[in-house]
Image 1 (tube, rainbow, N blue to C red):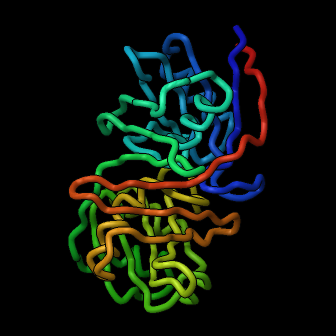
Image 2: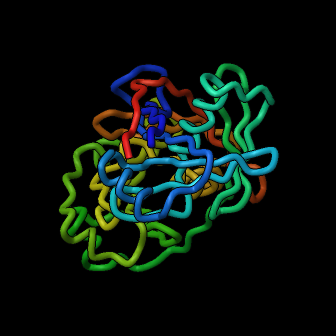
Length: 259
């Protein structure tokens, strides 16, 4: 059996930046153990698989060690592939996922994803979080992930995490953020429990960051930059219980899997 495999750099218009995702279109689902093995072999933060379903597609995401409930950059990458290489002629792509229906549209030279807004509540910072970050945040919140707020962009940029301690936290991942100098806010994201020490650009985390900063900055449309080594940029908009995340993609590689 041969399967097509694409590697797409998401949230960037240039290769070697943004967040690389593998995307594997399927006609029918393979066994979950095979999907997980492919994701482990790819060794990227996410591998996306989709099959046709009605007028849309059933989409799933795997890290090298786990299937996850929501992934932004691999969703953007899958939509980009459908629009540019797989002859999807409609103005939007509808994905059915573990997180419900996700819609991606082409808008003004970008792709815009319609995702659920995620809430978070203030909490006391666990000891493992402070040890893992090596600095005490100004504020800490907990939702699907931990959200640690720092006072400056330099605080976020200079942080050198200890992934052993961060992997002990009872959450998917740990994101850190601060108000940006050239954009509305900046962030980094760590998910060592899921086999991803630092994620280059994390769309799903921006489902929490967008309403958080929208409330704080009193504006619903924001610019964001994830300042990982590769880096990536997003335009974020908070609309009631939804978040619109916009970005660009570029295809880096096309290949085949032999099973």
